Length: 162
Ligand SMILES: Cc1cn([C@H]2C[C@H](O)[C@@H](COP(=O)(O)OP(=O)(O)O[C@H]3O[C@@H](C)C(=O)[C@@H](O)[C@H]3O)O2)c(=O)[nH]c1=O
Image 1 (tube, rainbow, N blue to C red):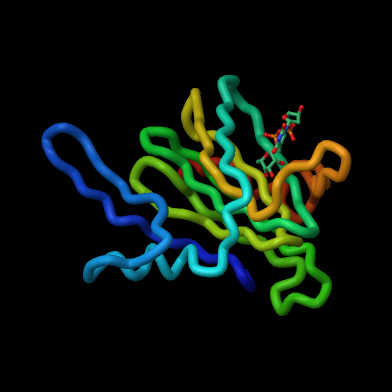
Image 2 (cartoon, rainbow, N blue to C red):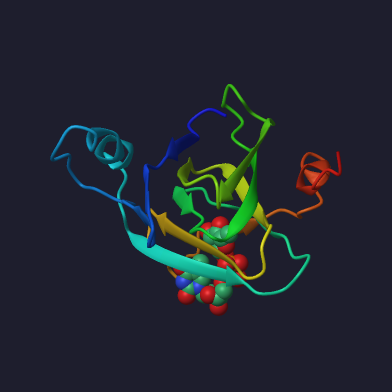
């Protein structure tokens, strides 16, 4: 989808567990450039954490007109992201995209303004760590919602039994 960027993170695994670099404002050594480049030009206005602790809950769809969201699902949580392009002048207007994040897929997803987003937790509990490029203002919330079962996305939440 136009403007959506999925950035795979490098996982360091050893006998104690794992380590991930999540954010860099500059590159220092070979191999660190890509993470710095991913965040280049992304204004980190606010860092957020959301946890879903119930079964069979879908969060979203939400969209913003001013801010971008950048999402990360910390392992061992896992979730399924569904995106719908609401931007009228986008080359991918009306198109959808599905990304599974979390355990097994350590990645950031950059979601531009105008792209509706939601997720289905695939674990319980299920955490989402994310940043936004504009501070939430209770008096001027840049928050809009469309139903999770909108016809364009209704079928995409399903976990197939194949
Ligand atoms: C988003 C936000 C909410 N709040 C407050 C308002 C409200 O009382 C309470 C819960 O807010 P919400 O119901 O909007 O929370 P939530 O449903 O988790 O909303 C968030 O969901 C994720 C998936 C997104 O896409 C975000 O952009 C945001 O819309 O937290 C803040 O104080 N600061 C914030 O930045």
